[in-house]
Image 1 (spheres, helix red, strand yellow):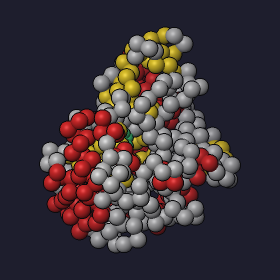
Image 2 (cartoon, helix red, strand yellow):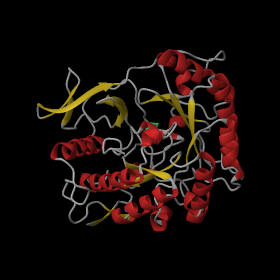
Image 3 (cartoon, rainbow, N blue to C red):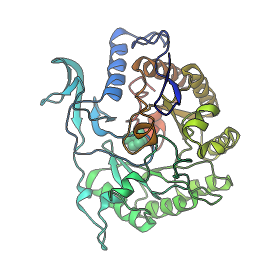
Image 4 (cartoon, helix red, strand yellow):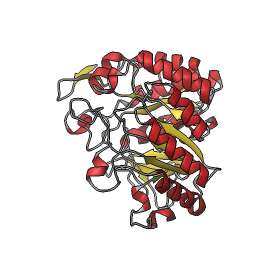
Length: 385
Ligand code: SF4
């Protein structure tokens, strides 16, 4: 069914045959299917619970509390109206029925209580994601943040405006925070993303300096970098040589029409440039150490999305499938009022992409660091990929 958002942009909220159950995914045991379906539902509807570690803005599509669910990190919306409740004994319930999931909110990490010598709180420099990932946006501004250019799902400068972060994290600051997060809170990997700069490197140069400094301070910490395709692909080798071992080059949708509508600025980086950057990244970082986000719920035909994922997998790139989530501070939510996708669509796409990943022997947890390794924002890990 095609619907129209308030801004006149249209998207496909539901599709024939998407009834909320997995209609065209691979054959699964009923218990397995229920488990994935429940994980999809809480990814979209959220849970009623407190979460001391949460994210309320920033780059990319997330506004969640961080939990450990059956041993895996999970980023789940906090929703006081959700029918899913985390019981005092740490079980996921629906109408009082136990759904078979252990859920524990991630505790506030100790490094959040520290500050640099000149008074910058560590939690303004980097945040804990899941229970073992340190995440930072090294430059919190983006050359594409003008309203006519901005990605409609992104709130990178919103957290800057509320004072919950600082505009530029220096290599020295990141090294200091990373050392403390490893020592005090057992962080095992780190994600460094960046707003896009005006230069040929599109932000990769500062990332390279930050990676070098963190690796020097904490050699054991695995790092994923995330950036747009640099105009000069040499920057990809520079990031690897600095010490990063995984890289995310995020396209969000491979459909040019969707890209123009949702990412007016970024869509001028052509799909050819993305493909060249992914190929070079696989050459440098290796098979299954490269990933990209694909967002379900931006109006792309789900079958096209799955075909895009197939192409990525054949290239050695992990398609990190996540649902679009409403997020205050974004144009998609504040202006367009775009809802989360229908759970049947997310269920089906997740199952189909998970089956392709399994057939290729590609697992997110085999990435050395980053979002695919963490898996908290996607249901792919629950689906066995
Ligand atoms: S998947 Fe990525 S963005 Fe989501 S919690 Fe993990 S590291 Fe953070």
